[in-house]
Length: 512
Image (cartoon, rainbow, N blue to C red; front, side):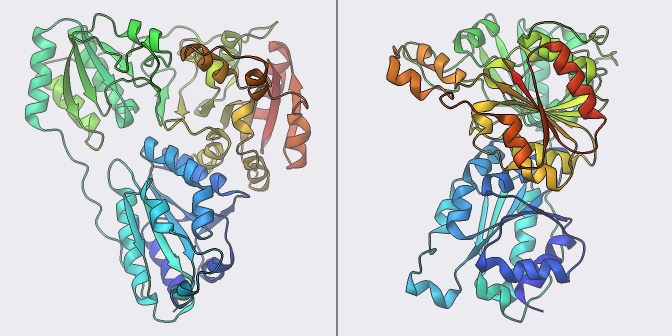
């Protein structure tokens, strides 16, 4: 057995059975091993951020890691934006990065690079397997690291001779550390705050936004009157009928400060203190009031549902029915608006849909209009590296095993990763992309105002996507995805309904 075969068998033994790949010469023995060893689903991406972003989306829905296959240091570098977003979303991924043969590295061939150095900023685990005999054991450690709560990026660098040399040994799966439980003192401290203090906010993030944890948070809120709020950007929120109508900390600085005004005690549940996405002249970086006290119920890696249940029990909180968000919206007609788009999605989405949200400025008010939608999952960009949406939709569709994915996608961001459409077509994935075509970097126009700059003609030209106009219908068609334009809510609703009846991908260019 060569090293590459031991790697594939070790990955499969550890439950890693999907590989998002963009291979090159140094990975050919790994590719050959994927042929010889059955059981691994291989998905080709035409650019490395498609590969890494898809692995991020897969983890979010499958709750287990996929592997990536990247070509040497430059291939890893191409995928770093996706890995940055994945790290911020706390997604578990096993990166397999090819490299020069060990004996060939001293010759400094053109693709020789500091792959370990480039991986360090996004990886919790890095290992270079310099011998075929070590590949299996190193892969088992990478899988263990990726699965460690709350999910981590693990990078295994594989010199090509470690792949082709004989001597590979399959390693048994390593025990994944148990998810840490909250300190009983943290639970009791939070209980004291909720019993005796006013203006308490529970800020929920990570796994605290899953349905089971929401049930416990609702018990606490019903018994104490505390507020519940989600972090501004979240890897996965379970929403819709039967779930909490949670709002998020707003993106805009002034709105966020206003939303947290009057809070005297902030209890963090798998969440971080709410801060600004950027620093702005004369505006606060922290959104909570200066007099507010911060309390930690659970760290990012701890069991949120268990901690919330223990807290609810400590408070003697009885079971509480989830608040009724009201009837499902009817599909609106007429002219376009952000509220109309959100209501159209809520009215027409299939049950258990997955929303991949990179709507940016147009979608900041989507949550209130979708509280009464059928039960669904909502995925957001946690790291801010744009272009996250199309590849995450690929991985989410595979990880969600056939559920409809609805990608709400800004046009400027989509141009970073349009190759994901080709993968959606090749894999026949049930992805409906609503492409929000305003032909400008609208968010940057707002950021100009936030930083107090005064844009002129040259600056505005840099934020304009016209001259020439992008044609997303033609672009999607060229990659095998059926597409059409819409400029009214009527047309949007008709096209969305048609797309949901199709087995594969569909793109709607919404002319906003």
